[in-house]
Picture 1 (spheres, rainbow, N blue to C red):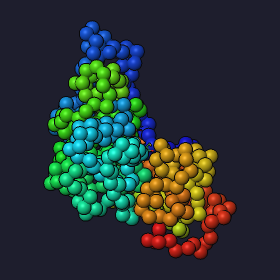
Picture 2: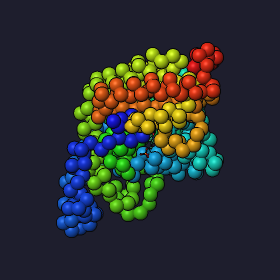
Picture 3: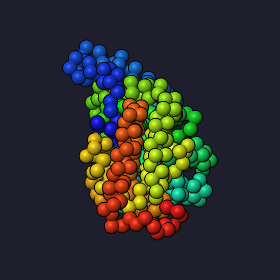
Picture 4: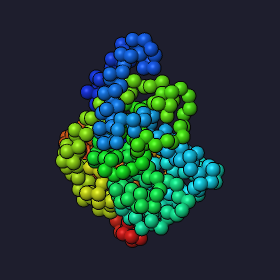
Length: 396
Ligand code: C6P
């Protein structure tokens, strides 16, 4: 049996999405900017997709959504665009983010820091989210942008985006939210939340890889990251990825229609898995069930190295991760675990399990059986686990 529990890394393309994309590879393959029929015959599908995208996130209007190649590009674009528009000439000098953002935000912030931008990395509490008071205290007259994610990719914890947005409005600071792990799991409403920028990536909600988007409220000017032709109104150059855009639009509409299912069925299966793991002694899960997106668990299993667990589960066809797929090649401890104050030995025991609407009850039962088996086996050969574990600070 093969069980895929790494949906925060990427998801299966919904067959209905693939079906909509298919004609744009070998039949209607023209460049939409060409003046002939091969180009123009792609227009109805592109315009339908743009419609599905802006409706899916409840944008102000169609022109507010710009297609990019992925969320990494969208995040880079916002941070570097704000640098060119507001910071480079000295009007502002400061960006605020959290210490648990995705590497595409953190590494870009570190790059901007290296060229003189002041960056504040807000700490997180034991649930892995920022405190609003810390944000208020960090904002000053020179703050240009606050960039805080909608939901964390490792813990699934939801951030108080509405409150963050209100604070930013009050202080006259732009607000960007990386909504990659929220779309398709909770309702993401750009108008209601009043975010200025919002990033997303199709492959996280059963769309294709290599296509994402950036919402820019009221199409405000933002210096482009990619200069070139006049694609996307000159805001993001590069020949349009027609199959990708068509697929992303369809995936967005489907994701929206499955939100109830996510909250009932995906959450039920996630909670079943979580309750079963928590029956194992010396385990803890980061964050509370109801403040998380319905598909994610980040669990620490004392005495069980995350990599050992992955290797063992993989032998039985079960795919999980120790955290973000982008950081999976180093054997560092989980950075979000460290940010919430877990001691180093616990941070090495992180296991991220993420479900999707394609996950079945049979798969969850199989995963429970093998997680229990693997824990017994790995603890029996562990040099660090004793059945009288030491007291960790904060009960972690
Ligand atoms: N996180 C994970 O395993 P791209 O790869 O550009 O489509 O998406 C980047 C990205 C941005 N923001 C968040 C919150 C994300 O979770 C991701 C992708 C995957 O957690 C792969 S590293």
